[in-house]
Length: 310
Image 1 (cartoon, rainbow, N blue to C red):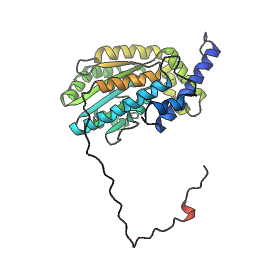
Image 2: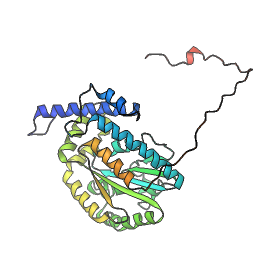
Image 3: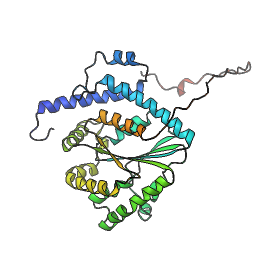
Image 4: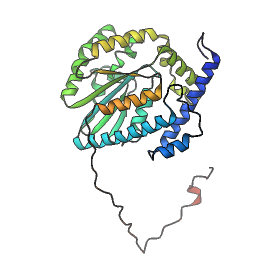
């Protein structure tokens, strides 16, 4: 339900637009960059959910596929040059971190680009050096690792929820600049993104999750409690940015109330931070299949076949 003081009709229109955005996301997996004509034909008769922000469906998909093509080129360059790339995605719950990570990885090789989304630390991990469990996920040469939340949990959720003490937080702030400088000196390209959304937008996205059974799994008790502690999270974020924005690994802010624009802006910025070049691959010739006159293909028993229900 809309917060007090908001027009229910406006809220309903916004919810309808959000649903249409969900349909768009399903299209993303099916389409590829076959040119403007195909995209135009697909969306010609459909209402434009991006009209309010000026980012039309046609432009969104065209730009998304173009940027994903550039990500493939970046991937090839990372592999050829044995680069080590780490990208951190931080922000409030429902800020859109997972959405942009999905679009980055969508068309990349999972052996090259992988996601690290660590659960709460085990009892053993709690007794280790704080950064130890994150180090295990750092890339080797020719790899890209995207951290869906990272060691900055200590400056955010752990601090606000009381999972660590003030001394732990202070030690983190003393250690993290040196830890990140060490990563950069070792040859790792380190990028840090904070996805920023407004109070109203988070309320809207949480409500949409509550109303949609398919999305309810995204809401945890921790998410709901974080909503209540909005101002504490704001203070923690401001302190974190002030003390960990260093020249070797600066923070980059992504304005994320418009989630589609946020995805494009973040991906475009990521690409601009690495000086990559196209890799020329040798032409691929499909080999002739070998045929053996003695080979007889056996029929598959009907009992093993998945029923044709569609």
